[in-house]
Image (cartoon, rainbow, N blue to C red):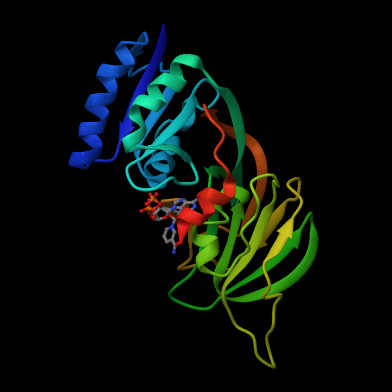
Length: 259
Ligand code: NAP
């Protein structure tokens, strides 16, 4: 007997797939368990799986996630909605667990330290005024940045917001932290690195400022106001999310589906 839970995009088609799936899962001995699931199945898009991971962030040690996409294959989702029978057949056979590291963000506010986690990215962004911040890599000063902000993404998030700001796409075989500027100011008085910087997964990136007034820390679909914060440290791998992989899906076929 296996305990599962379905997290579904609130949309008629996704809900109908969830109903169909519930009936089929009974036939292979899976039981619905809202409180103590071993497996969380999402129906929707990559965004639906992202939301589910944050909703169930306190369960990450004990659950695995598997996603069914109602459009094309995604980066988190391994089946499409017209492959439900195949999904159930594969689930009956079983698969393996693949762990993906999350980005940890430690925010320092006076003596207080606040901890947050992201799957795709964490970005400090200020759309009200030019954000000045210093970048430290493993405690070593790198530069003073001026512009809208800086995005720190993980491999899995390299195809998300990072890609829209001309960051590099990182192959799924490589774990890394990527630092990408958001609308940096580059002229004869001020300049910063400009190019995306891809770093070893054990790196600590520290973004510091005398004033983050007006700035937000946006992490996946969530955000906090950075008022009174003076420093945010980003690292990888303090927490992991586990995906249940039932069949191999080539990374480049996922990538092909993106554009
Ligand atoms: P959302 O509607 O859940 O997601 C926005 C879009 O980003 C959706 O099309 C989603 O795919 C796609 N996406 C999410 N993770 C991805 C990944 N790892 N690789 C490729 N595409 C991915 O919006 P939200 O609620 O604001 O969610 C926040 C996430 O969306 C952020 O982590 C951010 O990276 C991403 N996002 C991207 C952009 C951009 O590219 N300009 C803008 C805003 C947000 P599905 O359609 O499969 O759900």
